[in-house]
Length: 215
Image: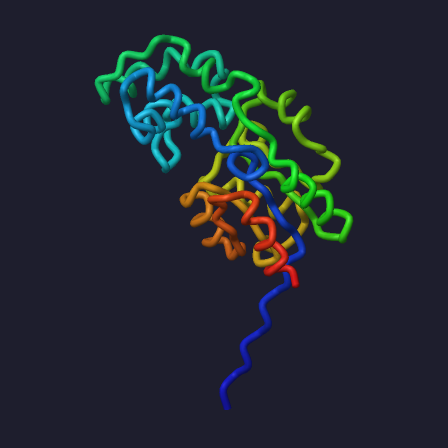
């Protein structure tokens, strides 16, 4: 007689990425910078934010808290040279200038709603210590059960350690987590831990998808 398949654990925690989910994607700023250099967005993305996999790119190092944001610009020179791009020296400032993105209020409202409904909510983001004050202005941190920032953990998505830290801080098992992110490599690592995922390409369209996992 075949053994019964154990039921899949229900979702008890919903975790949100910041850029591309709670705010508009950083790609909008990258597009403007790419135009200045007569380059395409993928090239400028590779220069400024590094490859999909984590490594020693200066942006990755800053997100892990290993170097300050102020050190990124100069450290980008070898990466730009590989693509025959001469940086102007203000690209990081242009990328991080306030007002270059829009907060997606309906998604923020969804976070608060889920918390009121009894779900644990998490913010899982690759970010810098220097950016924390801006995030505190944009978000209601009290709506999150756990806030997991790469610089504080010393690991960045898609490195496994930050996913384990998220489950630990939320106090749930990995299969109890639903995660929203706009980068495929981050989604793939979450899935390897057994998380349910929503790959966000349109934040507003992703909102009703959340309840499909919860009902």
